[in-house]
Amino acid sequence: MSAPARRFEHVRTPAERMLDVSTIYHEPDVAAYPRGAEILARFPDAERIEVPSHQTVPGLYGNAGAVDDWVRNKRSVLVLGVKKSLTARPNGRSADFIAPSTSNGCAMACAYCYVPRRKGYANPITTFVNIERILGYLERHVGRQGMKPKPNQVDPVDWVYDIGENGDCSVDALVCDNVRELVDLFGRLPGAKASFATKFVNRDLLTWEPRGGTRVRFSLMPEGMAKRLDLRTTPIAERIAAIDDFVAAGYEVHLNFSPVIAHEGWRAEWAELLEQVADGVGPAARAQLACEVIFLTHNAGLHEVNLGWHPRAEELLWRPDLQEAKRSQSGQENVRYRASWKAVWVRQLTEMIETTLPGCRVRYAF
Image 1 (cartoon, one colour):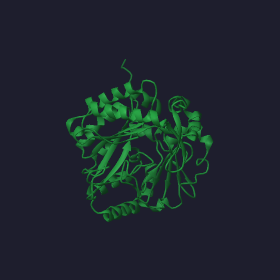
Image 2 (cartoon, rainbow, N blue to C red):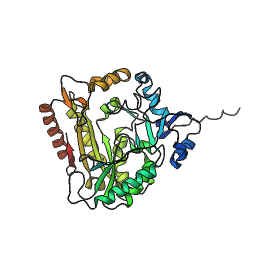
Image 3 (cartoon, helix red, strand yellow):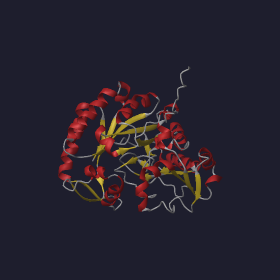
Image 4 (cartoon, one colour):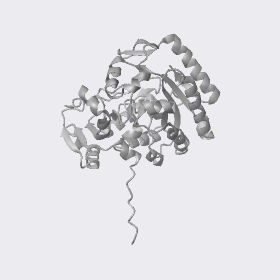
């Protein structure tokens, strides 16, 4: 009697686990754009629901009840629209300018994300299909700047444009080629560089040709904290392991230590993380390494939302015994760690970085 045939189950790739689009909300004219037609063809089985605007999605936008479907919406919903207003806003921290976005929202589910309610409470990905107009605007904007007159903390030579302010470009690249075309653009523009922070290792990006024109900022936090707060993201060890590969592929790689969550024992956790980085990064990456440090900012609205889908996260994020009110630059009422304590903690962490990662420049810390 012959042995029964072995059954092989398909093991889903990280991309398949991240996105399984079953519903596409779209503005009326997206199919008239080549990128829009490409995306619709890429997800042929998805239900298509026409909406008047990507900002107004009935049943999703502003729907507090969607908190019950938080992760499902992240994975299964995609919104397609046309970017109407194109501006490059001055920044000065992560970049010199914030580029007009080619997307907003994200398929990952970090509990501290500051944009969870812009497209329904889960804020799934919105992709803008008029990429040619965005690329043309950026090329003209770069051309008007001329050469950077003097070094600053952002970059000593290039004007830096953050292309992923309200999303994660590594995940956006699973939807379409918008991010690849941005990387190609900055690979050929003299005096300018793209930049984005990411928590997802998308190794397809290693086959592109950035030519030194794109800075990838891998976001890192202690592994135990990430398992609790960085839902649906690439494990910390894999992010660290990818750094050398991205440098070898022609990217500049920096680190984004963010957010730093203060709690009992946090310094020991960060000491361990910094040792992991020191042990896991080779000489070529170390020679160009820099970082930014951002302590947690939270707000009462997000606190209430999180209580509906991930209350255990709030045990770490909502600490009235450590936090005080703060009005943001946009006028929003937030909470941050008490200023006198935070100043000490920022100094302690930057000193740890200088000791464990000598030569890794701290571009800014707050």
